[in-house]
Structures are given as C-alpha cells and as structure tokens.
Image (cartoon, rainbow, N blue to C red; front, side, top):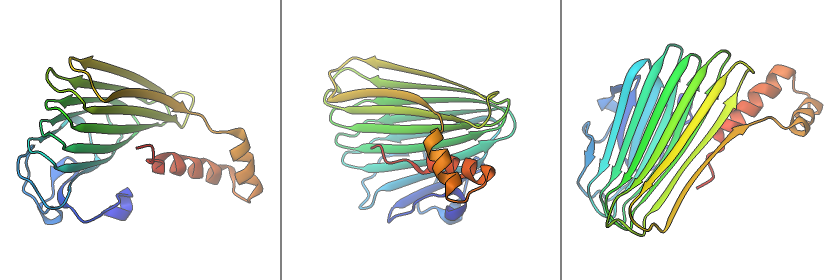
Length: 225
C-alpha cells in the first residue's frame, strides 16, 4: 500500500484512512480527531485513495511537544469536496503535512490551519494535478488566534495542469491576531521547462515518457520544508 501511494513510512504511531474509511489493521492508534496524549513517537496520519462527494478530515493536537505528520494522496474521477481542518493547541507541538490531489473531475479542497497556543507550528504543502477538463478550487486559511504569538505558519500551494483545458484556482488567506515568528503563504503553477523536456528526449525518452517523468518529479518534490 505504501509503495502504491508513495508514502514514506518511519517509526511512528499511525492513523490510516483509505478511500475515506479508517483502516484498523494498518493503524496503531484508534480512530480519533483529537490527539491529547503525549507519545514517544511522532503521530503519522495517512489519508489515501479515491474520494467522491463530501469528505472531512479533522486533526486537533491538544498536547504539548508532540510532532504530527500528515500524508494525503487522493484521486477523484467524480465531483468531490475535501475539507481538512487542523487545529494546534499544544505548545511546542508541530504539524507538518503533504497533501497531493489528482483531479479528473471537479474538486473543492478547503484547508483550515488554526493556531490556538503560542510557540507551535503548522506547515502544509498542497499539490494539485489537474487532468483534461478538470476544475480544481483550492482554499487555504491560516488562523493565528489571540495570545498565540511566536508561531510558525506556512501554507503552500502548487498546481500542475496535464492539459490546457484543466483549470486550477488557489485562494490563500490569513487571519492573524497575534505576532507570529513567521507566517507565509505561496502558490505557483508548474510549467514544464523546454530545456528539461529536450534533455529527457535526448536521453531516449518518448514524448509520453517525458510527460510521465515530469509529473512524477512534480509529485515527489516535497522538500520545501
């Protein structure tokens, strides 16, 4: 399963969802929205598979000094809505997330990252791959509440259109009521570099192989944090 979804595993406590359903045999923790116990290992929340209709993933970290990792890899061939709500109330707790969505229809992705304690971090990188005639609407809101200073907030978007008919829209926003250590937003659309395409063709790859290689490189480049 991990090879299929290219999920990097490491020593951790896991909560695994596949096709929107909790998978107990792959999880070391019971299904829960709230992490309120300190674990010796990081907590790794994994959400993979096919989605359609409305889907929600809630993550609340309510304990200090707890690292949490989020890995999302989904695809949809029918209209789908995915809401990811993240709330960090733990001092010195950090949440890092990689979100990858492959959209072949209509996708609405809404991410809310809320800081509700000082000195914590939420860093989320989201990538969208849009197929022919697809429409991807992605919103990301960073919320830094009062008395929650010195936090690190970083929400990043990237999109790759596989066809000129694919549309990708980003809507980032911030609501800041305390002075953060840093609060960043970024968004970009990936455009294949003609020099890279020519280099791959000179290496013997066909047109289709060049396209697949560039998509794979885009998917795997989660090294910005």
